[in-house]
Image (tube, rainbow, N blue to C red):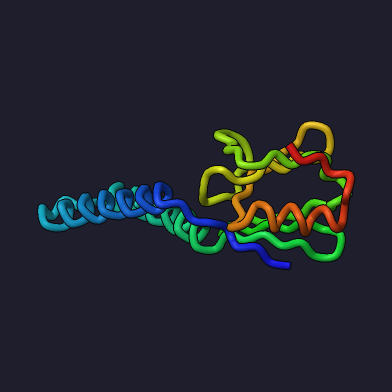
Length: 141
């Protein structure tokens, strides 16, 4: 089963502001004819990372297939065997760590001893319902 990630307005606002800022600086350099090699490398690096962020924003999803919970956000992906998941914390936001989310108030999935990943499915309740079908020993907090 596929779960799309919810998209927060704050994440989208940050993307729009970054794009406006970058385009403004680029056109200022273009108009003033001060684009040099080092500026080109900086622009290329900025475009590269901005592309990954935008790709992740529009292409983040989660899957529960067979015995695995799979996640994908832009070029980043992975899978966790559902039997390794021990706790899911609802409606929390993980501010540091491994985040495959595009919104706040998602789910913190804890697995193995001390590992955790933050996700933000459109429906936290539906995701929990489906994952509990595969592992009813998961503690919901």
